[in-house]
Length: 120
Image 1: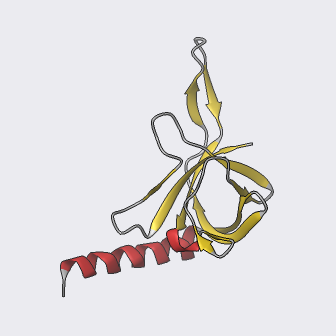
Image 2: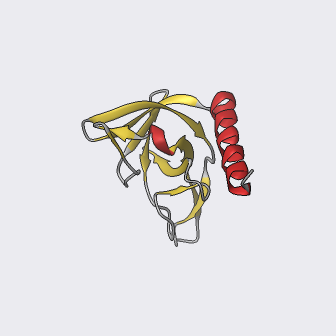
Image 3: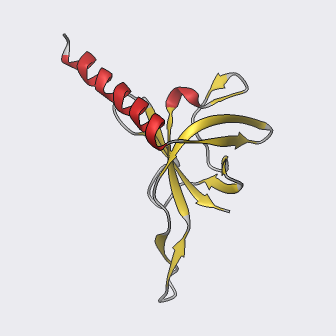
């Protein structure tokens, strides 16, 4: 068996296990388009240096989703700044932390996206 196929199988198995064990239904919105999908929430409340000799906590959260599940208007898409994820009535807006992109593939096989958000 090709080692690449074995690694790809392992990545897919981990994505399935994460989805089954840790994910919850959320609504992903961009303008008038939306999709309900499974997402695994992560990080929350990170320090933010305001530059005024004070450290504030910004409520942010990363979400991990299957790349193939982000389909809006019938087209697979990539997260954009300003998109929203709604989880149990709480709205999180996709944003790009300083020095980072708003989202990235979590591995070389591009099976999972990690999306950075902040709570509105």
